[in-house]
Image 1 (cartoon, helix red, strand yellow):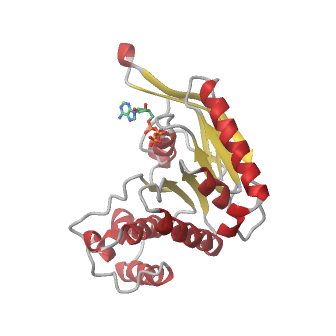
Image 2 (cartoon, helix red, strand yellow; image 1 turned 30 degrees about the vertical axis):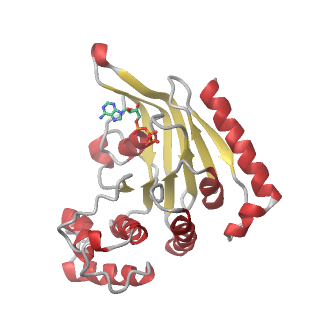
Amino acid sequence: MINISNLSYAFGTGSSRTPVFSGLSMTVQRGEFISIVGGSGCGKSTLFKIIAGLLEPGSGRITLNGAESATAAKRLGSVAYMPQQDLLLPWRTVLDNCLLPWELKRSRPKAAAIAEIRTLLHRFGLDGTEGAYPQELSGGMRQRVAVLRTVAAGNDLLLLDEPFGALDAITKRSLQRWLLELWAELDKTVLFITHDLEEALLLSDRIYLMTGREGSGMQEFSAGLPRPRHHSLNYQPQFAALRQELELKLYENRRS
Ligand SMILES: Nc1ncnc2c1ncn2[C@@H]1O[C@H](COP(=O)(O)OP(=O)(O)OP(=O)(O)O)[C@@H](O)[C@H]1O
């Protein structure tokens, strides 16, 4: 679904040039759930902005759905991107927030878009919130609305940047369970940024470790746990061993 090879990016030019990463390569197959982990500031969000077509990389190749997407303008609108902050517009109701992707594309009648959003609201456990404003919702509900808006964009590839990072542990657990079920149901490909190693192991097929230095690339880590997954996995020795291995790799990457 997506193939990235030898990508590099730097903010600024000349003497103010700040390299973020280089030599970065990764592949995502259709239907996979892939997490990206790495220290703060290593460039995870920057990578998502490049894939989404909001930033132009310095060098490298990106292939989406088998076709080379040489420029950022070409990629724009071809993946669904949920940034780190939920960015729900406070003056718009839940329904109107979710209609934003439709407003940008207007590729079908509005009534059809509204009908789909209502079906998704039900599926996402958000019945009765259609006319509510974001500030009237709990943190967990806001995140579900933000994911819904991302899904409503209609793309097969979802980029989710730390969607549960700011939530308390209990809400986070219930949303992880919810996302696992949703992913199995919706047949989407997910690229997911997280700082939470247990979350990465619980949700993902594979994990990429990102270090963010020049020429550092990405290190792949295969979670390989059976599906369907449940939180009880967290207490099994196999899970604890994988978590330890992942943490060690991350630590080694940061030091080397
Ligand atoms: N607009 C910008 N101008 C200059 N530097 C920037 C800009 N945006 C980000 N950076 C820098 O680029 C680097 C990568 O930032 P990015 O947000 O991609 O990291 P991240 O891995 O997503 O971090 P976190 O895990 O904390 O969200 C950081 O050092 C950051 O300070």
